[in-house]
Amino acid sequence: MFNNVYRNRKVLVTGHTGFKGSWLCLWLRMLGAEPVGLALPPETQPSHWDLLGLDMRSEYVDIRDRVKVREIVEDSQAEIVFHLAAQPLVRRSYREPIETWDVNVTGTVNILDACRNSEAVKAIVSVTTDKCYENNEWVWGYRETDRLGGHDPYSASKAAAEIAAASYRRSFLDKGNKLLATARAGNVIGGGDWSEDRLIPDLVRAVKSGQTLEIRSPAATRPWQHVLECLSGYLMLGEALLSGERKAAEAWNFGPEKEGNRPVEQVLQAVKAQWPAVEWHRSASPQPHEANLLYLDSSKARELLRWRPVLSFEETVEMTASWYQEFIENEAVSSIRQLEQYCALASQRGVAWSEAAA
Image 1: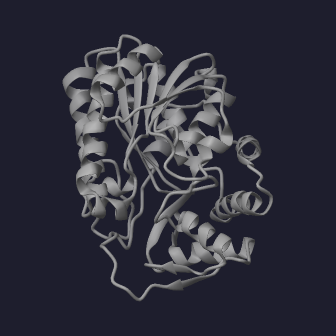
Image 2 (image 1 turned 60 degrees about the horizontal axis):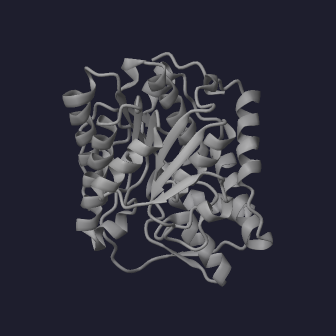
């Protein structure tokens, strides 16, 4: 898997205590890597990171602390850095715009500069978001060459993080032995996400408390995908960079197949089919601006990295709902089993994660 490129390799994951980061660390451990985590302590209770109890070094540091970040990057001797640490919430960015810009832009620059000055680092995958594009409510998918932008502070700060990464690539890394790529994923769901103001975690909390969930925009369409789908893309991209594929040092979209682009209400209906206790109602109060229509075109990753999703929309929702259902009803954490199931399905369906052609 991934040509065994991660086995016994030192890897730094920023944001490892978050939703995506904790799943990535679980997968890296399964691949035989030696990950080190750099992040703030988990902000939620429960937290997927705490529930996993992974045996790895974990450093609780704010990525805005430039000196400490540089110390940890250097001390970790990581050959590849997956930068996922961020303020990732749209509605929180309206409440705390300065923090959002500071974390997402200054924090990213701190990570990139520490990597620039590390002799060990060979590859960097900096993760942003599908919301980094200037959203024109197009009916076709955004490509990596489309204009960056953003209405809300979160989206705009992530576009700025992309610009910062491109600047570091051109100014400092292109002529050296370090390769930097950025990755933009869709609306990621899966077990273990407990963030505020996200559809599935909010829904789970409502079920647990015996309430119905207030839905802001049931007709809003998003590219829904399971967390393991985008992580497989990040890992393939990391493999290409570690192998010295300079053409991989660009921006990449990792989104679902076209059938994964669904309105919020269809996601809710699919979850309810799996978990009948789920109930919701539409909000009547005015809401901050959020994009109504957002698609990703991931043709580049499919053609050049040979990446493609494993799960259908229905399987994505079923895996997500069953993780939470098992946890709420039985206090069971099924992450390892689901990761093994996902890898087995990939093998059965001929998805080869070691054929990057960039």
